[in-house]
Length: 425
Image 1: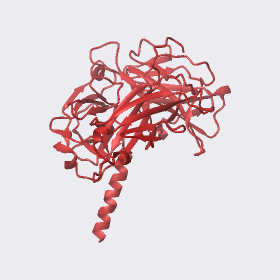
Image 2: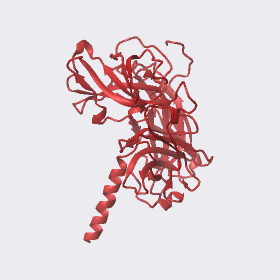
Image 3: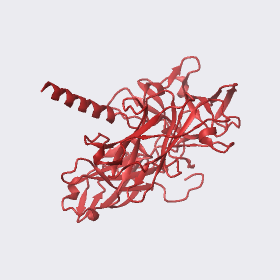
Image 4: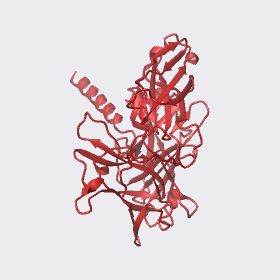
């Protein structure tokens, strides 16, 4: 009995630890981790089970040497809780795959080794749809995890129709966006399918503020309608701030100054200020994501350089915000809120500041505040506007009777703006 209890505790601890590692970097020498389908760096890693699609895994090892990196898959439910089943239940081939494609950096001051892999490999691939955590680790030892990324495999069996509307509630009418949609599940061929459906709705590929397990307002035959008045409402936000770092020497207007050494580059940005209350102005952004790119050279993934980029945020009247933590936020920080990303208020400059080691590219970012009062919501300093262009994703999961994991049976991606605006709305 003692051994059985220890085994159960081990399984539970393993599941808890796996649940906490989606989209995280654990080794300090790992930088610029990307996973995207095809060649589009701005798209979520969602692959179709039946069409043989693949994704590109890219990352850098700043030690500049060669290591033995492997990866494997962990099947999860819709809430990213790992499913306690054997890998043989969802993987064909080997349980782990070595990453053999690497290239040493060239033309860059900072030495690194760039690794690349096409996911999935023919020697190991998922044969079930659902949520997967891709774990990359050293020397074939799964306890030496370097980083993790989310990967979604979809087997399309439902039809999704969706649109963005203006909320009816006066407090949300000019600041929020409401998602209305319907899901036709007749392709599931299950008389009890409506009770087995789970829905996740995301804004701009963010998992941190996604809606989970929305309930249908009406069921009309095989069609589930999600249009209740008080659900699926997102803050509109504002277009993301941008930073062009495709060439460290051709400084964009966001850069105040830079130091160029023989082995390093330090870039100092102009202070940002809160934009809340200003008139809404439309401009094209990447909805919080970034692209690795360089204006010079042939391959930005192995030729792009790194720089220490210093960010500054100016609070009104140079006064720090009481009871609030400020974070640099976006895909460039994995949408995380760790202590290392928390901005520090400088009493001398009267600015919040932080720094990030960044590769040449084009970045979206923002500043997120988190109130120390847990009952108050977090938010951005740029205000919320119904007109803002946002990208929404609806994920439909289905767990048939007797199954132990949520299958991903439908994905829909749509934009809040169906017009073609100019510089302003």
